[in-house]
Image (tube, rainbow, N blue to C red; front, side, top):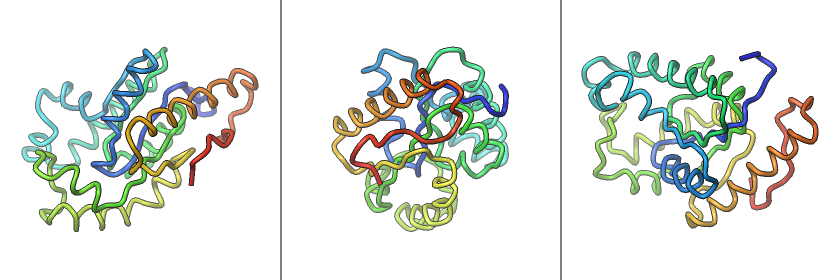
Length: 196
């Protein structure tokens, strides 16, 4: 895909527990389009769960597979809602690919809320520390990268239905603007309301 081309996908980024997969599925169902989760694509390609990849091969193997999953998404010829892993923005080539893929929305969420959401899950710890502590440190370290890659930031602590409606309106507006002015490759969209 050419460097100056942007796809039609809606890509959700944010820390683990921010609701990327849940919101992505709901939005894709509502809009009748494809839903993809990079973690699911990685697990399918590697033939094992994300937790197993981390345990057996470490984070570097997972990140390499994540890059391949993102390349697959870039090559799709139909719009999709894409949920990404929280650390996908750590790799510079991924950040470039995310921006090429389409509209990137950062689901920003207080880390204590995110920690409560993932409590008891099988998501692998990156540091071995309690989820709330780990998420606070990770969120602080990744914040500038989420800011760099995102077209818009949404406070993800709102009610699910409100968030889905917000995302639907934002994506519709962005796609209409692209059709109206297909030469415009700038990363600006009109104000969808209730944004930071």
